[in-house]
Image (cartoon, rainbow, N blue to C red):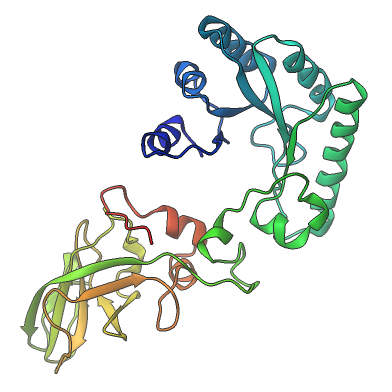
Length: 306
């Protein structure tokens, strides 16, 4: 999880398996993390001390994972400080060093750089153990690390985009299938004459008489505005072009002169391919990565889990 809000949502839904927050909390969240018995990463002595103070006040044990920066440059203590920090956490009465971790920066693009990160991380683990400290759960591999670096699986892995059925790189296919669909509904059908402008700015002029379907989804739901006039959707197994600018809450689709679609038909914005489109196609059209496509689906979009 990234936030205590997400963790609390899972717990309120009855999830009882251990939950680890992989983003550093702000000070005001420490009480909620400790009280909810959720594990958290830490990367410096100050945050670890604040967890110890809060855990002592509640007379509980806070479970921490020490993040070490081996080359990502985002969060994590230096490799030089890792042993001392692990020792400090281990010696605090109300803290438990539940794990030690790092994060790969280029596992999808550079074998050499990732190998260097693994070597540095292994050196930190050796130092921690030499101090008589059990590092607990050791983890490093994200999706790309899982695929390319078996030696970095350690005690557990952290699958990201691969859990959605996509490769961490656009150009490296792996034997998984997409599991997420983003769907909506046709809410309006209208006949238009050739020469009719569609949507804001009249960036699309219908070249012929046709039928335009209005679909209840837009950039406010996570359907990227960059898909204006280039995206496609699927209705009844057939693909149709998105025409005109994507609006906040709606898109328009040209379903042809003699459409087979009907009002309230389901529209697949992205999903399993074929017939597509999938998140990889959307990512290429919007010059981003599948991670952003799947994460951009807004909170107002209802989720159904199967």
